[in-house]
Image 1 (cartoon, rainbow, N blue to C red):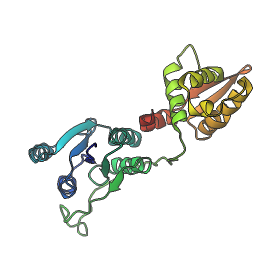
Image 2: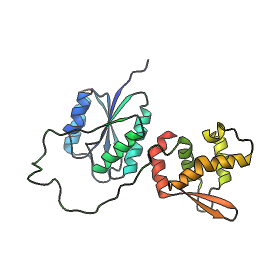
Image 3: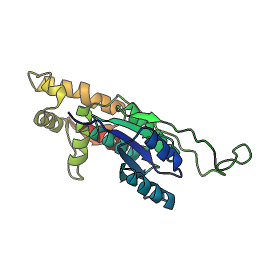
Image 4: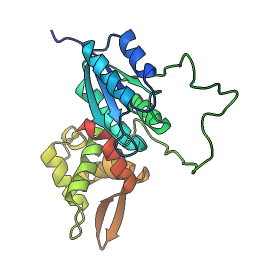
Length: 245
């Protein structure tokens, strides 16, 4: 019988106790720390924290992610969670930058992972006397996200578009039908369509229409053919949900 491990995921920001205390409370077996090598990596107290956790018998792995990129954080967290499908996975949404916390929370909504927020015992300075931050660089609109709107078949098609479209060739609907047949995608395999017309109807209903409606693909009419391109949003969604493949 496989051992069920306690897995914790925590982005690295400017926290230590908010990372360590939940790990000790739940007796975590494996910890994944998300380090942002783009905007700033580990601090000396992070290094000491990692050494102390390992000395206590905790298996610590440091993964890299752009903690200012919602989709990159989601992609890393959902992938780790998928790799530990039979374990207990908890995700710290309070240990890193705000966007990283939001990405972690959304990733938990899309998987079986459990998010948690750590209330600190004290602040570095009294917030009623001095604000935590100063000034403003910009206000960034957060993307709305349909958590359950994309199926494994749809992720597979997005991945196919990403790998097959080139400067000299753009995927057409007939290419998607051939790919779906070869890959035995569920929307065709379970329906067992009688002819090509039925296959195209299933493709439109299960793949093309919902992906186009959500803005993940763009469909261009070239003569009598329809060419399918992946949008920037589709790239982000593929990155966040590649674990479904």
